Length: 195
Image (cartoon, rainbow, N blue to C red):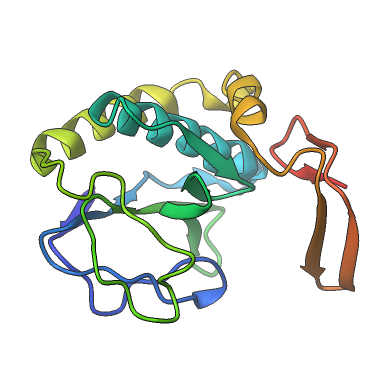
């Protein structure tokens, strides 16, 4: 099941951060996947990294003048600014050995006039370049559905690693065990960041 919105008043990303989603200027969609057994959810890191690769590739078809890079695990960047985000969430029911995954995607296509707090961090892909949003969404969904059949074997990891601009950089990560700082050296075979 796919939900597509023209705008969002409560769009959010990782850690509940607000995702600015004004009307007529972006793509805001959620893809609800069929329930999966809990053991399969161990591949969730591969799912998010694979979605990021597919999203970047489809967007570059529509905006061939740009090169998109990825920030682990779920952000798409054009130069120094974030232009898209991905959020993968699981929905559980008590006593059920399965869970449904929801892939949320927000893309700033022609968004302008970002709120002051985002102006230095967020950007848009096209500015004045008009694209047919419905066709882009359709092409993205076809690519994502094709990816769902084979992402778990890790076939998108090499491209993810190639696009990930954090590798080789010093990073600070907040974990349940505190704040960790180190050099991002690789993306593991399950989609995790190796520091």
